[in-house]
Structure formats: structure tokens, C-alpha cells
Amino acid sequence: MTRIAIIKTGRTFPSVSERFGDFEDWFITALGPGPQITVIDVTGGDSCGPVADWDGIVVTGSPAMVTDRAGWSEATAKWLAEAVEREIPVLGVCYGHQLLAHGTGGQVDNHPRGRESGTHCIRLHEAARQDPLFEGLPECFPAQLTHRQSVISLPPGAVLLASTDFEPHQAYRIGRCAWGVQFHPEFSAEVMRAYLEIQAGSLRAENQRPETLLAAVTDTPEATGLLRRFLHLVTNRSSR
Image (cartoon, rainbow, N blue to C red; front, side, top):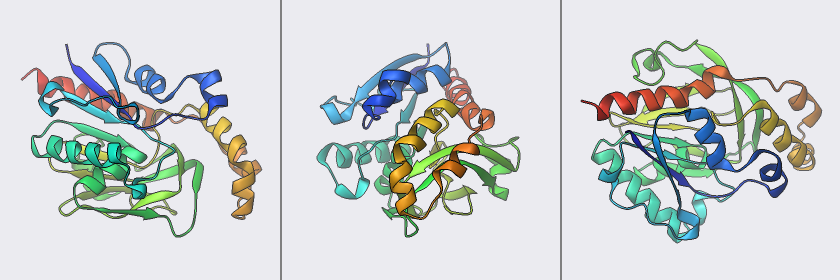
């Protein structure tokens, strides 16, 4: 059975978890049946163990900031760098995307334009056409987003795969089988709406219109499907 580690790097808002569950629940649902999934809460002191224990690794989002350099975060960044070196498939999402970049030599910081939130179009670059995870996807597809920090510069040797008008580094690959995605494939439209409702005040303070963002929220099947794609890729590698 395929062994997947979900590295839990934080918790969602209490009002969201009461209605929809927490980060790991959304990933487990989107990955679907089949794998043996272990949730490792690194913020609570759980050990990731040897990277070789896992066929694939998924890293969640977080309300934390990579630039705070918390001990658990720095340790996880080094562990992810080892996973990249050993060619254990990794998918980092939002904070996980940033942490993977940080651990492999990229730069993470606050986005100079503030927060990107809501459903937005992800535009694939030419390199994505031959990428094992992204090949065959439409050139542009909707995805759920909420982040204030970003990968300001990619790790050395990383391949840029996708952007939005707001964020140039929406997706990249480092090494043969490690990916970072700034967007949230695990978010449902309902979860995205709940986030926008909570963020309404801060969005207005940044001269954004939460009502417009809420009206634009839609389902994101291509983005969500990346989690099953990742699982399929991991399963094929582990069965060789």
C-alpha cells in the first residue's frame, strides 16, 4: 500500500474547522481512497521520521509565516530538502510550497502587494506541458488562493510551471519529483467562501472588494485533481 505522509504545519480558523474539518481532512478527502495516510503534526512536536519511510509527502498550509523561522519549521525545511535529494515525491501547498522553496535555497517573504485571496486563474507555462504532474491540464484553470507570503525567488535549478497576474511563482518543480503550489487544491468552494467572509475586513483595508471575490468563487476540479494526480504518480513510482 502506498504510504503518504501529510505534514500538518498549522490549523485553520476554529469557525472553519467546526463546519468543514481541518487541513488534513481536506487533503484526505481530495486524495481519495487507496493510500495509507499518516498525519504528522510538526507544530505539535510530532517527528517526521526518516524520509525513506514514505512513498510520498504532502505539506499543508498554515497561518504561520516561514520568515518567523520557528524551530519546527526550520527542521521540517531541512527534512524536505533531504526528501528532494533522495527523490521522495513531495507536494508542498501554500506554506508547504514556501517551506519547500526555503529549504532548497529559495527566498520567501511578504508579497509586496499584500494578500491574494479567492478563486483565480492559474496560467501554466510551457514547461508544464512536459511536467509529470501538470501535463495535460488546460493552459488556464481556476484555483482557490489565500496567502500573504510568497516565494520571492525560486530555488536554484527549480522549473517554473505556473503563475497568476498577482503571483509569478504559483507552481514550480525542484529536482525530479518535488512540487510546490501556492494555490490550495484541497480547498472546496465552501471553504474558500468561509475564508473570504473571515478576511472581509482585512481585504477591505487593502482596497480589495470581498463581495466581488465572493461572487467569483467557483469549483476548481482541475486544481483539486492535482492531488489524485500526485497520488497516481507516487503509486506508480513505489510499485516499480
